[in-house]
Image (cartoon, rainbow, N blue to C red; front, side):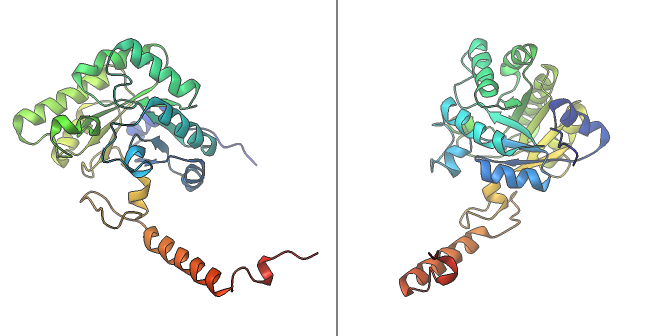
Length: 270
């Protein structure tokens, strides 16, 4: 049996040239990482979205570097082929270049990530450049930036109108020029995402930004239909696990109370 080879940052970057669409799914634990990896997902993003889907917060701002390291380490154990990226959480990297270097190093040394992701545009370019210079691959993130939800006044589409569009484009170019190997485009008009994808030489990974990006990312619980009451326009649910889990749990409760579980087939004998 041939050994499974890890996808690397340069290989992800090269997929833009080859025209191969890049698939990215968030993961926060070993079990889901193993399933997505075996299915053939290219990249597992350990997103700070864990603050919402794992911790039950209203936003990502309370997530710490310790949280990210713990969950990234769990995901890395389940990823044999997929490229593993660790989101750097709010205020772990924005404060200074030295903090960005420290947090990025921690993600790789303790979390066993293979790259880090940072939110920000022109103002963050020097941070990205410094982290890349020491040998750590950086995935950028522009457009709707969840770590700036307070400043943006909520999760609102960015890049509408000439002024905003120009800003997002300039941000994207600055991060690409700083040495990032890929760039998440979140919550921007599809026409702007198409323009950015054509004008930067690194892959764009879209989420809520239309079909013209070089790849797409979804939060795993959205993809699997785990939150029936939450359905943003950009999310396509490929399963309805909330219903399946609910039904299975109700069946378990029913069988335990009726005494039909465990039966002889699920019990040990002398």
